[in-house]
Length: 189
Image 1 (cartoon, one colour):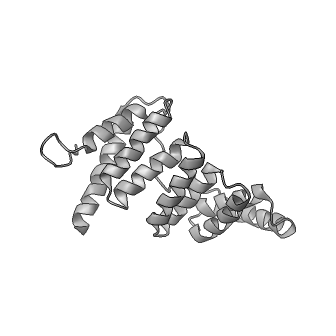
Image 2 (cartoon, rainbow, N blue to C red; image 1 turned 30 degrees about the vertical axis):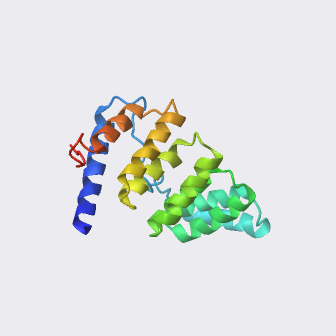
């Protein structure tokens, strides 16, 4: 069971990477895999100190909470990111970007169930938020081993975000993941 889960992940990641690289996407780079974040800035420590100073003076500064949360996210300090994202979401619960980043922190810290809950909240407030829908599919497939649920999340992405730049690649990946007609087996190429 454990080995088949690893093989499923490897097959999914490699086939999605291949599909995105040859699909002729509108953008030059495919979307970042779930949880990779942006490249870490060299001055992250100084930026964190600046945000901490702002928050000492004004603990309810929404932009500082999001900024420091993002820096903690980028430096893989997930529990600190979650703490600051929670405070920011208490002030702005409809911020789908923050909620999606917090979900990724939950996933990386070993709590994919909570990650799924947060992504569903993001989607409920912002139905056209492509990144939360995409990440939901990835987490359902890779972490929860719910291939059908992940496919449904991606189909909902295609339905709700008609201008999604990677629609052809995602459609191709969904087609590869669907059980072969009548065989009941997943198809991976």
